[in-house]
Structures are given as C-alpha cells and as structure tokens.
Image 1: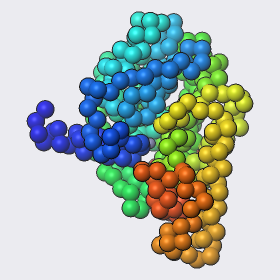
Image 2 (image 1 turned 90 degrees about the vertical axis):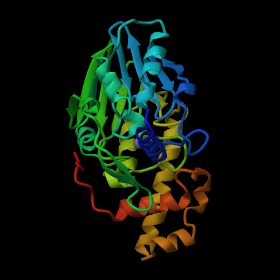
Image 3 (image 1 turned 60 degrees about the horizontal axis):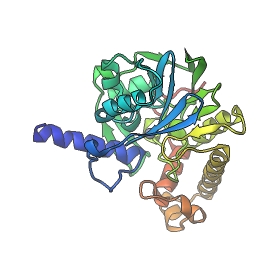
Image 4 (image 1 turned 45 degrees about the horizontal axis):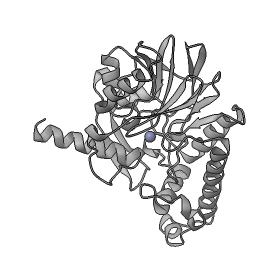
Length: 318
Ligand SMILES: [Zn+2]
C-alpha cells in the first residue's frame, strides 16, 4: 500500500472508530492481522461475533447465513472463516443487514457483496453511503465521510421494515426513525428470542448520537422503548457495542437517556446557555456513564442539539 492510500485508510478508520466505538490501545490504527473474531453462541442458531467495530449477529443454519452488520472491510475474510469454522454449514453469507450506515457496522459491505452476499438496509443508509457527508453530534464532534464505493451500497432497501425468511426464522428488520441516525434498523430473531439493537443501544456509557445524520436523543428513547415493548422478558440483546445484554440493561439505559434529557430540557426552559450547562455540570449525577468517547460535556451538547436542531435532509417519520 503506498503511503498516501495508507494514510487516508488510517484516517477513515480512525474517524469511523471515533464515531462509533473506541479503538483498543487508543488512537492507533488497529493492526488488522492481530484482530481475532470471537464467536459466542447466543441462542439456538444465533451467534454473536466480536472483532473490531460493531457487534455482529449471525443466523447460521441449513439455508445458509444471514449476518447483521459486518465491521470493517479488512476483517471480512476473518468473519467468513469464523462462520465456516462453526462447522454448521458450508453455505455462504447470503444476506448482510446493516443496522445503520456508520463505517464500523457497514465497512465490510463491499467485500461481502463481492463474494456474493446481498446487502439489505433502510433507505437512508443507502442515501448516506451514496452521498457521504458530515457525521457528528451537531456541535464539536464532527467527521467527514466520503461517498462509499458502489459495491458497498445496499442492493435491497426498505422504508419501514423487511423480513428475511431463512433458517426457519422470520428475521425482521424494523426502522426506528431519528435515533442514533435517521437510518437505524433494529433486527428481531423471534424464534430464537434474540434482538440486535444496532447503535440505538450500546454498552460503553453515554451513547454517540449522530445528530448531523438525522439522529436525536428523543428518537433514540422512543425507538428503544417501542422495540423493548415488543420483546419477551428473557430476550437476549446484542448491543451495537459491548457485551451481550438483557432487557434490564436496556431499561437502565433508557432511564438514563430520559433523566439526562429531562435535565437538559429543564435548563433550556430556564434559558440557560450550552456553556452554562457545561459549567454547572448538570449531568454530574450520571458521571458513571461518561467515557473517553462521549464525555459529560459532549453528551450535554448532544442532547442540547437534539432538542434544538432542525432535522436533517433524509429524516422520515413514520
Ligand atoms: Zn454508529
């Protein structure tokens, strides 16, 4: 790889990781050769795969393989090998469903498509991958995304929901508008009692909400609550990032989102400025949720922008 290409690959990678998760070892390009794909059996024929980037859920069975999200392009072969090593099927990954457009969840689209998988995503995922544009919290957190290559674009898109009937299961992707982005889908595996929540639900603390890509804290709360209301009490929850979770974890997270949003709304009602809110450390009671990616100040700003911003160009409410 020549120096210029390598440099731009590093920058793209760092930005993607900055947006959606934390890089192991801090601010370094991961050495892809050392990334290992950890596979955990979740329930029945559903597995969770963790490498670098967002979590993957996989339905592996007699009809072949469906995966939800695909991390980064350089990991595609390792992901395929890890799925094959389960020894359940020699059939390929037939479908990839993206939970949203961010590069640490959709970065593997092109290699998967090139090896025969069909990529499925919500309409706005294809739009944002096509155009590129600015991602961020609508304030100090900002990052430019270049348009994706053609092979990375989802071939099948949906506005509200789509169902993939494979391995004896009706795998359902349902769009929740204006949450982490404007193109999020939550994926249900009803027979196996598993759900993949994408980055609408993460375990690293205060979440990154991509207000610049049509996300909002209100939409995130609404989407996660609506999804949770449809789920059995003992459902296994694959978060966008972090450990396998349950509904109590989801409820704790929603409670934090609601409480922190109410505090910022109250400060807005009292005509406080963003700087005042930061100086007064109004989210101090929720300090344990602070992390080196989304600090208290960044999260105040995120909620502030969610509550005061105009929606982006692709926002759809249904
Ligand atoms: Zn994301």
